[in-house]
Length: 174
Ligand code: GDP
Image 1 (cartoon, protein in one colour):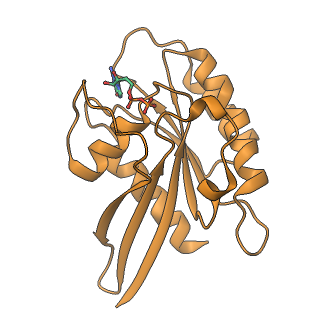
Image 2: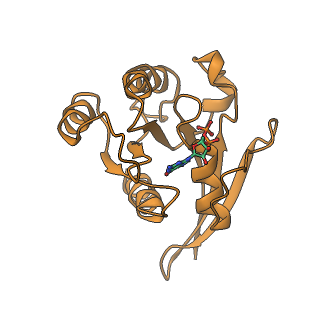
């Protein structure tokens, strides 16, 4: 059995659904009132990935420190993959993704100097007040070196597990 310990980051503006995403993925719950306690560094999820591979995910949420915009290097240290999240009803949160990705490319590099695999997640796709189109997300994702992008709804549990599977698969094949 191969055991992999993967540190994964979740970044994006405040209120886009990062903590809810981690909570949903790790604990299988969505709670409107839930807010991750500040100061908790990371959540852990164990995956029996295949007959040969066991994966321990260490998922780091910036938990309320988005105001620093540029995160401390400690947060990025040793990270092997990243989720960049925005809210489809908030165009400013989409525009910020460029900044989040640049910060990652500057600070979170693999030993060979390449940037870590990143997936772009368009959250809250259950809401009707959507302002960011699929076309613009697709163009942005390709232009900025994302592995792929996906529409998710943490609330309706749409594509949450699938997004993480795509990211883990990418990390394991890098
Ligand atoms: P964070 O600041 O990025 O960690 O965002 P939170 O996880 O605290 O979520 C911000 C707000 O958005 C909360 O009120 C959540 O209940 C809500 N939220 C999160 N995901 C979804 C979603 O998929 N759909 C809807 N409608 N609301 C969501």
